[in-house]
Image (cartoon, rainbow, N blue to C red; front, side, top):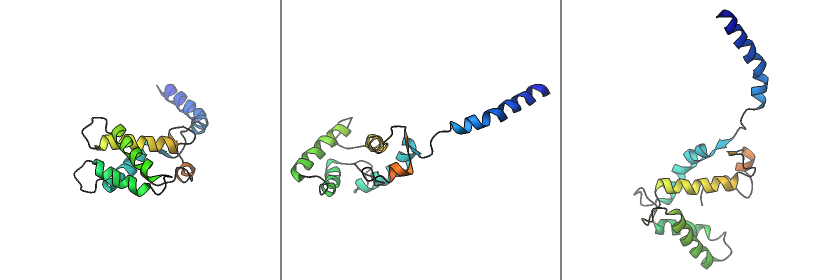
Length: 134
């Protein structure tokens, strides 16, 4: 028993440098991104605080983002299509689960190297930026 423990300890000591080299990249995973930003985004969009995002609440957010879009008319129609795509159960509102799908899309767009982790560089990149939204 004592020899087994000593041998196991020696193996772990030898393996430690190799394990350190293969450590996961530091950054934020999708789950961490959703946990950190999901409540903030949902609270900002759910202006009447009923626990769901209505088409009007979604449209209000898209109107705010329309300044970025080249054509406001096109942006409005794009927002309606986006809302319909995100509303998986077709109940006319976005639940928190459906909003998490939006967050996952945002995460994927920001994850430049597709490693499943957002680094500080990816979070602060000009195209992705640390802003939370759709």
